[in-house]
Length: 166
Image (tube, rainbow, N blue to C red; front, side, top):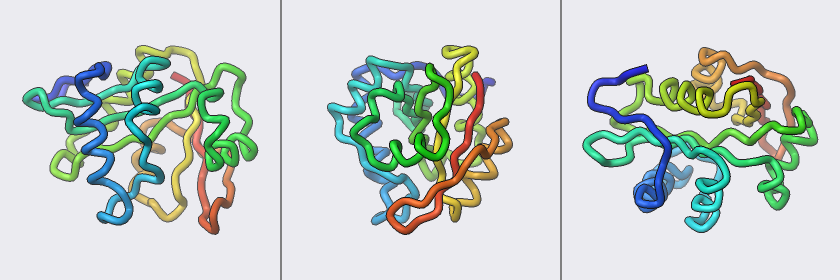
């Protein structure tokens, strides 16, 4: 899926600072909907373990899609809660978070990044969670062929678990 002026591909170490800046700009305290702010060391570890997909415009990261092997998330309570609600296949990976900069939304970047991930990880199940009140994200992920497989409560909030096969 080509988007004019945008390069979709695997992130490199040189993208890390831009990824962290975009993540910080989309935290709930600033009006964003990301569920977590991952430290740079963890993002770098994720990047080495699985494809972390980015969209670059003029060399600048404008969107990212993080992914990680499920065993890398044993220390993350909300992911443990998701996998308790829906155990997934043994080789499944955790999809997300995904983030598109505000000025780039609605251009198809999320779909293009997911298509690239599916190309790089064919046949593997991806599992993710979305807050039930994030209607835009639920619509977008359903449109990309992901299906609701479970739900769970965490910290007083209602979440939906979605799954797809690459």
